[in-house]
Image (cartoon, rainbow, N blue to C red; front, top):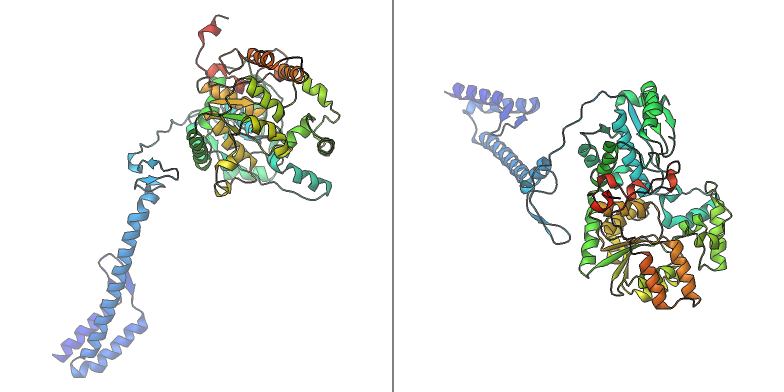
Length: 544
């Protein structure tokens, strides 16, 4: 009987090499532990077993089982919390509230986004592009390059944004200037495509038109590293036939072509209608800012709406713009000298000797804050209106903004509407700050640019697309002439105000034909400021 019990304990010891617990978890018992158990078994075999040894075995089993079940319960609990987020994406399936207090729908209630079918075509090669300039200059270039890639049946690599442009951060232009004088190195904080735009949406929303990849396939990266690609700047204002006859053969020969300057490389007019419509689709649908920028833009608009209507004033009176344009109206002697030194410090700014007065009278200077205040009052913009300043730091600071602030006390900026923590990740990234201003500009009741730069043009076109929202396009040449006459007393206030309103009666973003000037594409209306092929038809224009 004792031998039977001894044999039973030996079998039990062998079975303990692998313990299989209910959930399929296996625990290995070491050989040394097994040998110890065997020695213990032999020691107690003469006494037909020991209750003390059995108690130890039972305690080990109970402790191990308790530990394992505790782990299983912990994993199950965490799975209930993390599981939906991992499987379905953030946020979790529980209904939440965003920082603005608006209830967000649960993930289960949001229908899955239906992607367009992939376009299948014979790939002629790969197109890499580097966009230069500011945010909106790069934005229009991206739209052009997508249209060109579609036309050439090539694969587009997600565009690279400007990494060396002076315009990388105009708010730090003074720092750049003095660093250059000291011959020291200064490196602006650069934004990649995915820092500004929703790259996954960009790729997926356009996949029925063109294949877009985040990077070259591995087999082609070696060619890039060895420099076996063709790099060039395409000819400005070219039509699609140029790309078919000149660029496509190069892509077929080298497999990869890199276009290193892409601003204003596709003509405004005379392009196939499908090309024009694709440019619009990319601009108004494919290029979406990152969720962080979009959310912050909605928050700014909500804060403004809580206090009534608002006007966005794109006041281009920053130091870099004044130095570049040579416009010094209202500046003191020290400021004029500082702006002149800055202009000479940059060899790629070709125009050095500039007559500021003549340039201003030709309407080629941004309006000053003082001139802007007179224009807004003459247009009967109510003094109770909120004026959102979409710009960098105004040159001259509070001194130059005094007359505008006196006429319109509700001057606001993103920095005054938001907490510093909200803008923490945007600081020193001018493109992200410009993206925020872009979103607010689209939603404003009135948009008024004081200079016809890229942002003014692209926002103008986008507001046309949204239903011809009111955009007052100031005629600077006529306006400064009227302002000078009013200043010297040649015009009364009523005469001045009447003349200003008459001048701008048909400059509020209404439907209009795009100006076409053969052989002078730079003087034509910019496609992105008036993308007529994508807008609702206007019967009055069709009869013209």
